Image (cartoon, rainbow, N blue to C red; front, side, top):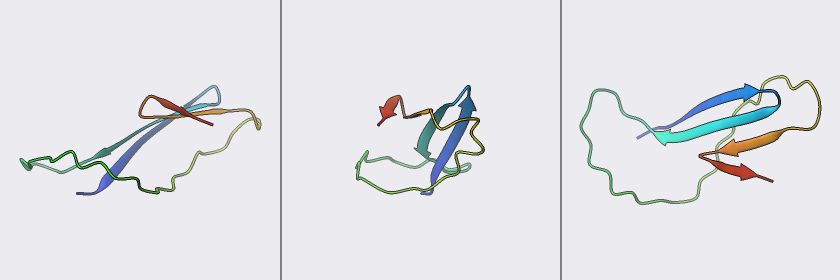
Length: 60
């Protein structure tokens, strides 16, 4: 299943939700969590001070 990202930027707080997505299929999920790397654009930022929160966890 592809990993999907939903990213929003509000006042230099970037919030993202990463999730597995399928279209119109019923799929059993084993919840087999593994670390992974994913690159995505943060867009244009007004200054160099910002927060990034992914799946409710603030990144440092």
